[in-house]
Length: 210
Image: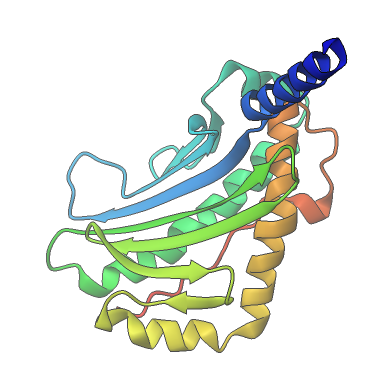
């Protein structure tokens, strides 16, 4: 009976250990571009690890900066990290600006959310990329089929254009399944010692056809 009891307890403890310690972590970047909004930056980027903001950029400062003390510490001797981020985000700002100027007559908002998830027990990863226009979904990347989903008729032209760009899709999949999870793990461990040129922040080209 004691052996059976110990076996049952061990199984329960193992289950509870797995239940409480298994966590799916995430790294997300939110890009927002505004037109005709007074006293507000026309472009803002926020980066989050496990839904906690750790990086910020806007078109007024034109500089990526840390938003957590731990982020400041791990990048203290990594000036090139902020140079890479700032350079990439300035480029992204120009892409968004070009897209939103297509319709300057009234207030418009372009948004993009992209990133990845990593299960710290199974090692499985998942990536996501969603675009919005004036508060509504515009186009979404399906990792499983490696195609774009167009919820609205206005996005169909963009879907066909992006679906046909196989090389671009392959690069995006590589980022979401390889590069992004590696960045996420480095942020979680509080060290950027593993930074290599191949792991520099990947900035996606946004080619809206509104």
